[in-house]
Image (cartoon, rainbow, N blue to C red; front, side, top):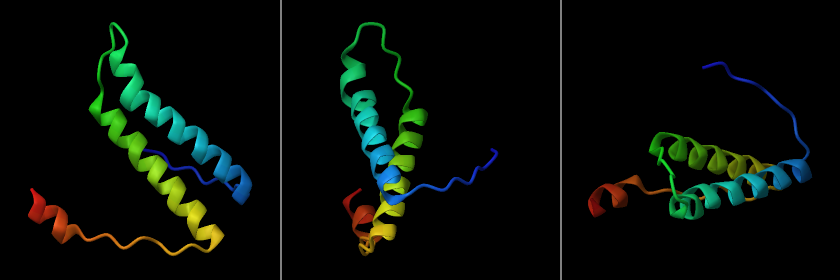
Length: 78
């Protein structure tokens, strides 16, 4: 997969993240209710990953600390 590097202002990144988040919501919760919808869990996973990365990048530029994730608890819950 080819990688691209882009530069955004914090305001542009915020707007892009909001749009992507809204589209992810539509893709995850609204589209499955439409007739003829064909689910694509791989694409949905990629979308969630990208929105998360956008939010992390935006928060880093705003000076917010990154949330601490505890993978051990997730493994125990399974």
